[in-house]
Length: 189
Figure 1 (cartoon, rainbow, N blue to C red):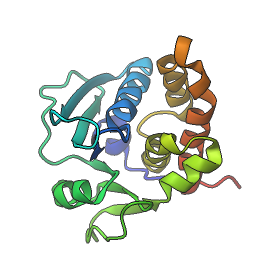
Figure 2 (figure 1 turned 60 degrees about the vertical axis):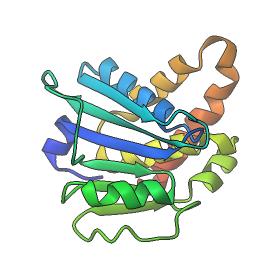
Figure 3 (figure 1 turned 30 degrees about the horizontal axis):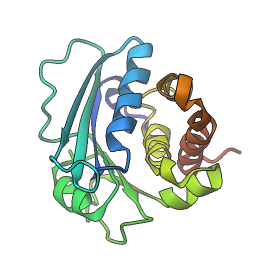
């Protein structure tokens, strides 16, 4: 886990991929988990008119004091679900930042020796967890495991809250996928 206390207190992450990969949902869950921990949060989605299959990204800012602007040109973190997102956003990550790469779809190095780069086989880990569609939560788990931006418990609670009611059948596999992502970066001893 990265131990820079500035990263633990105040941070911003850009999550990007194709519409339908769940980047906006993962960002929403991260924002909810952060609010539950009493943090200031902004969640700023961006997507094309075609949504599913088009491009989608979200910036989540987490802070200990009110956030002046949700627009971040150079985030401290990037979760890249596809190659176009990696190519577009990896150069913008601040030096010393964290880049989580979906190695199930990306076989290219982001060429950032000044950042921590974590490659995660998200689709494979999600399938093992019970749902290939939960690759977004594997990636979120890897980010949370690497940065400690929020607690694992807060994210698991936010996932359960997001899927409460009619969608409760997705909770177990989504939490399992999230845990698989955390464990991919922070294996249990």
